[in-house]
Length: 578
Image (tube, rainbow, N blue to C red; front, side, top):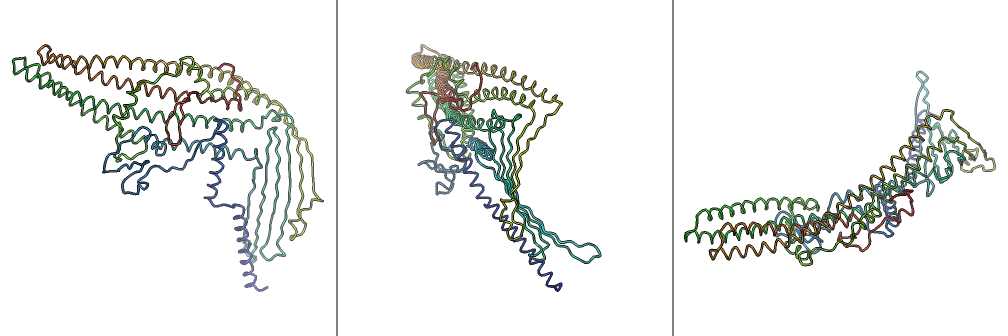
C-alpha cells in the first residue's frame, strides 16, 4: 500500500470512529438540556402531587413558573393589569386595591413566596432522584473512548490506536439490604488500518448480594431513604401551613398600613376641630378673655399640623414597604381601600374566639409542622441506637453471580453465548476484632437519644407557653377593644359638651383642647384595638392551621384545623408524651 493511500485510509478510519462515538454518545444522551429540564419538571411535580396526597389527603395547584403581573399584560405602556383593574406605573390615575386584590398580587408577585415554592420544588426533585434504585432500576454506566497516533523516536513508524467502551448497568435495591445489578459491556479496539485489525468484544453479567447479619432485614438499608421520604412529606405539610401564615401576614400588613392611614385621617379631623376652637377662642378673647388661651389653642393647632406631616411621611413609607412586599414597583400608582376596608370590621365588630385556651394548646400539638419535626427527631435518635447496635454484627453476605460473553468473532459479538455462561455463589464474611469505634458510636447514640427526648419535652413546653401567651394576647386585645370603644363614646360626648359650653362661656379653651386631644386619642385607640384584635386573631388561626387559602390567595376560615395525623399514621414516631 502506498504511503498516500495508507494516510488517507487512516484519516478515513479516524473520521469513521469519531462519528461512531458521536452517534453513540447522542443516542446515550438521548435528550437536549431543555428536554432534561422538562423531565425534571415532570418528576418534581409528580412528587409534589404524591406528597400532597400523603400529607393533606388532597392535591392543590403548585407551579414554580414565575409570571408576576407585569406591564405587558395591560397591553398599554407603563401599566399593570390585575383582574379588571389597570395600575399605572410612573404617572397616571391612582388605583385603589382591596385586601383580596393585594393577596392575589402577593401570591403571583412576591419574591419571598416564589423562593419558598422553589425550595419545595428542589426538595421534590432531590427526592425523585433518590428514589431511583428503590422504586425501579437505576440506570448507570458510561461511554468512554480514545483515539491516539504516536511514533517512537528514530523508528519512523507511526502507531495508531482507537478504543471505545460502553458499559450500561441497572441496579435495584431492596429494603432488606439486598442489591441486584445487571450490566453489559461492549468494547472496541482498532489500529485504524482496516476492519481486519479491529476487534469487538461483549459481555453480560448479573450479581445479587444479600446480607444475612449486618445491614440485613428490619429495613435498616432503607432507613436513609425512609427519612428522606418522611421529611419531604413534612415539607409539603409545612409549605401548606406557610401559605396560610403568608396570606395572614399580607392581610395583617394591609391593615397595619390602613391603620396609619386612619390615624392620618383622625389627625386631619383633629386639625379641623382645633381650627374651630381657635376661631371661638379668638372671638372670646376679643370680648375680654385672657390672651393666653388663644396662644395655647394656636400652639396646639401648630403641633397638630406638624404631627400630620410626620404621620403622612410614615404612612407613605409604610405603603412603599408594603408595595415591595407585594412585589409591585415603587412607581406603581396605588392606594389602599380606605375607609371602605374598615367598614366591615367596624360594622360586625370583633369576630369571636373559636377555641378555649386548653383547646388551642391541644390543636397546636397536632397541627404545627415543627411539632411533627421534633417528633421525627426523637424517632430517628431511637432508631440510631438500633443502627449502632447492628454495627456490632459480622458482615455475612451471600453473593450470586452470572456472566456470559459475546461471540468469539468480531461480527457476532452481539450473539451472547448463554450456553457457555459462568456462574458462582460466594459467602463473604468480615468481622473486625477491634469494636472500639462501634462501642463509642453505640454509647453516643444512647446519649443522643436521651437528649432528643429531653429537647422534645422542652420544646413541647415552649409550644404550650407560646400558645398560651398568644391566646392571652388575643383575649387582652379583645378586652382592649371594648374599653377603647367605651373611651371613644366618652371622648365624643366630652368634646361636644366642652365645645358647646365654651360658646356659652361656661368652659375654657383649655377644656376644649384637652377634650380634643382625648377624642383624637380615643379614635386612634379604637381603630388600633380593632385592627390589633383582627390581625392577632388571624395570625392565631393561621398558626393553628385553621385557615384555607384558595388559588388566588383569598383566606377562608376552617371549622376544623388541618392536622398532621395522616403523616403520623404513615410515618409513626414513637413519642409517648405529647
